Amino acid sequence: MSAQDKVIITCAVTGSIHTPTMSAALPVTPEQIGEQAVAAAEAGAAILHLHARDPEDGRPTPDPEVFRRFLPTIKQATDAVVNVTTGGGHNMTVAERTAAGRALAPEMCSLNMGSINFGLFPAAERFSEWKHDWEPEYLEGTRDFIFKNTFADIETILRELGEANGTRFEFECYDIGHIHTLGHFLQRGLVKPPLFVQFVLGVLGGIGPTPDNLLHMKRTADAVLGDAYRFSVLAAGRHQMPLVTMGAILGGHVRVGLEDSLYIAKGEKAQSNAQQVAKIRRILEELSLEPATPAEARELLALKGGDRVAF
Image 1: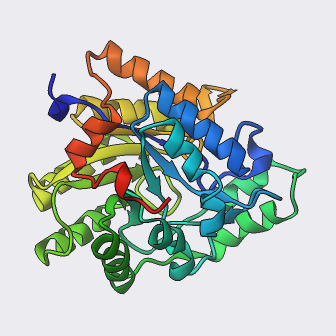
Image 2: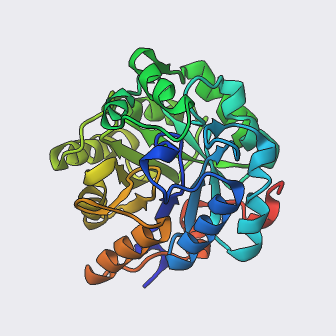
Image 3: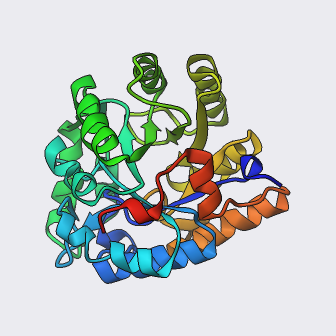
């Protein structure tokens, strides 16, 4: 089986959506993030999508120095592709969100393809006691919050991370309009194939997590991007495994991880990121699909290689 037929597993290790109260398994310190990332790679993840958190209280941080506390550990222990967020966390400026990508020049960065409402506030209603005072305020604050990524912001990120550092992108599309926006940048020649497009379903403010919506996203991407793209699927919460499995059946790649869902099965919280990676790997193999190695992922996505990063 050639690399063209393999399925890339991405693991989103911690993110900026869930807070420490929600799960004891959520990694927050650099040591925990590094350990869980390495274990996820050993379980079969070819790409590690990474955020950083304040080691003291677990809140999202854009500080490149915090990233430097776990990225070398990952690089030394595994060949997995490191993908650094430019989504950061709520209330960060674009300059803050992209600081780590600019400083560390990773092989990949995420890139949200538009400004959207990004509602986390319903989660605040599920808990009455919190580990940290910042958590309920952080979640409730998304009731009146817009995640900002304008055309100018995207152009800046493409220039300062892509052109300057040779970083390629996980283009995160939370709705149909985001696919058309990516098509606009493709027409202008500001992004180059193969585009790695992440269909994001189930975030409050974005497209809903249904099979029909996933098919709609793929049909739209086929029409707008033609053969210039490869797609992956992530789905929030309980929709994670069903929709990423559907994505693989449709010929796409998959993303799992505690950023996207805290569960491994109905009513059962995941014990680690590696547990989710192992589960989707088993599903893929039962479908006679083979997970891609990091080297095969680099080939499929035309990445620059792990020896050309700044960490």
